[in-house]
Structure formats: structure tokens, C-alpha cells
Length: 416
Ligand SMILES: *Cc1c(COP(=O)(O)O)cnc(C)c1O
Ligand SMILES: [Zn+2]
Picture (cartoon, rainbow, N blue to C red):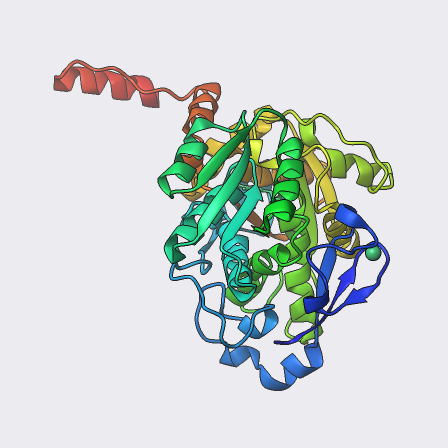
């Protein structure tokens, strides 16, 4: 393994991987750890032209896993990056690329982290894996665990969409619906895992989740032939994905494989904008009180983003920005991305495109820019939201009598 040590992002203290559980003992749940690699050693044995494979394990020397690790059989990562000239034209920038994470086995980017959790639980020989989630992390854990026959216990806030809960049950997870907020579900999960000795996948707590998710950055760099875009947009809830982008690009910069890190733009729902507010007002993210999140994009609702330290670092260090988007613009972005690029996003995934539009209007990005937006999860996850989105956009299906005359009339109606 090429890991040097784990560093507490609050105090800077370093730990050997075997000497620490999940967080810095001196800083409790706030003491999120960062995995630090021996880049010199990696550079000596790895050449970017020699990378083979196109799933998330392609850059395995940059992951915290041993030689003998048993990888889950599902194909995780290797998702397409589509160029969309029509979306580029729509906002007036040089290039737009959509990274479609909706095609992951369980339908969201979270599979990358869950695959890592399965490997780490295996390393520690822990039988049961747990997480708290608004839905997608849970589905990812349940699905990847099912592929290797491992037991999962999942804490979900009772308000999570019923369709997402059904997916968990189908994968055979034991699901606990917590009468409370997402943050309550997280607390309960942390306490249960500690008491019952389960492996805990929870985001912003388990330091390895960012390491799985950073593979999306590695892939984007390879898919663009190492020519970095100017800006990369991703929606932000707990802040793990946005932090992982920075980590993934930092890996490549340290190896000398890319010339610089693209500006990382975190997109938050206006009703769940803890990090965007803290960034705009230069607030201390460790003492800022939690907010009461309210957004149609349930996957990015977070009162106190658990991975806020890594998220803020990503945006600040990359000279990026946070932007906020209204629920209306999030819903409107669903049919925009679907009709202009053929990629069908769930609300949280559509938010990244809504963010591109706002960023262009407010001058955060400009006409010459090459832009990547990550579509983090499939629209099939939340069909009721898609139904609201299309009716909000004025799109509707037409009734016709079963004769050609009716068809002709309807078509005239639709095109006229
Ligand atoms: C989890 C999730 C996000 C946000 O990721 P964080 O790491 O919580 O910021 C965005 N979109 C989708 C579809 C997600 O499932
Ligand atoms: Zn510490």
C-alpha cells in the first residue's frame, strides 16, 4: 500500500492507518482524517500511459487498498463523459461535458465509496456494514454488499422517498427508518456501530469514502486526455464528493500528470446552503450552527455538512466558488439536461447544471471556458420529481383518438 499516514484536518496530527478507527481521537466526529500517499514512490512505479482498465480500480496504486484486496464483482466507475455542444451553446461557453454517474450499478456516484467500504470492511474482517443516508449512499452500500454477500444495516430518515427505500429492501438490507432528520440518523448510526462493532461507511466520518469517490476525478482527467477543464461543477450536500474531486486532481498534480487543478464549483440548493453561506461570509465552519435544510433535491439536504472541512478546502484551494440554486431551477434543469444531452438526472444531479447556468449569469465562468458538470445520480431514482419538473416546464402528453386525423391535429398542436 502506498499510504504514508492519515492526517487530522483539524489539528494536523498524523496516524498510522492501523492505529486509528475513523476520526482523530482528539477531535471526535469533527476530526475528519485525510489519507496521505507516498507520491514519490507511486511516481517511480506508475506511468500515466501505462494505465489499464477503465473501472474505478484503474489507478489502484492511488487507492488505500492492499495488493490482495478482494474487489466486488460489480462494475463500478468507468462512467461516460459526454460532450454536449447544445448545452455549451445554451449558456455560451466553449465546451460542456457531462459525467454521467447515473449509469453506476445502483444509479449514483455513491457506488465508488461503497465499493471502498466493502474492501475496507473485508480487510478488518467485520461482518456487518452500516451507514446513515438520505438514500443513495444506502442504496450503494446495500447493492455492493449484496454482490459479495455481506450484511448491511441502514439508518434512513423517515422522510426519504419510498422508492429509494424499496431499492434498499430489494438488495436485502435491514432498513431502520429513523423518526428524525438525516443528522439524527447519522448520530444513531455512529452510536450503534460503535456499540455493535459494525464497519461504518458514513460519509464525513469514514476517511476512505473520499478515496473511493476521488476516482471520478481520475477518470475525467483520463477521458479529457489530461487536458484539464477550466471549471468542474458538482452539487454539494455533505461535501464528500466535492472534496474528493480536489483530492483526485491533487493526486494527479503531485504525480506531474496534469498541469493544474480545475476550479471546483460547489453547487448548493438555496434551502440547504450551509457551505455556500459560510464561504460567502467567511464563517468558521466548525462553529457555524447547523441550518434547517429544505430542498426538493433530497440527496443534497444537509444541516451541518459532515465533510465540510474537505469541501471548503476543495473550493478554496482550487480558487473555485460556491453557488446556490433555487428548487425551481433545479427542477427546470432536469428536462434541460435530459433533452439537450440525453442524460436523465435526479434533482440533486440536475443541480450541478442549474449551477452552471447561475455561474455563467453571474460571471463565475466565462465564454471561453471548458466546463464539466457531474450528473451524480439517475433521474429514475425520483420519478415524482421528474413529473413535477416536466409539468413545471409546460411539457405534457397529448390525448388522441385512434385515427390518423387526430395524430395530425395533435402534431400541429405540438409543433405550432
Ligand atoms: C450524495 C449525493 C450528492 C452530494 O454528495 P455529498 O458528498 O453529500 O456532497 C449529490 N448528488 C447525488 C445524486 C448524491 O447522491
Ligand atoms: Zn485532531
